[in-house]
Length: 147
Image (tube, rainbow, N blue to C red):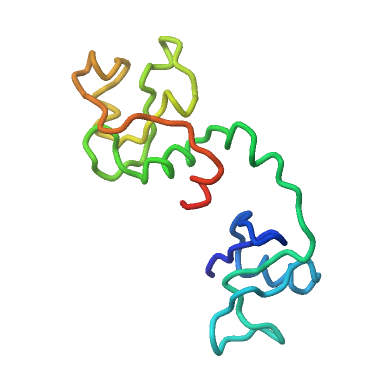
């Protein structure tokens, strides 16, 4: 199943949902098809790629401090690339280790491959002589919409 982009009534992007969820929105008449695949239908509706909400949803929360920290978010922010060697990453690493007071925050975590994460261990990048290729940043809602 493919993802469907959900637009607010003012055509601002909100999030992505599954095709099944998008069809439910169409059935409940909460949304309408904005863009669709040519020559494909589900019942009476064309197969949507983009749906637009019928009524506007207030999104004040999107203008707040940004998304909360998560492991999946760190991996997505870094493009699933290791911050130390550039290979595919499957784990996260704390720049300042948690044992030394490092927190689970956007500015203290980076994506890392298993080998680099084990090699760095419970040390800072300077102590392990493993410089970071990227600087960790706190994402905004807009940057997450592009992922």
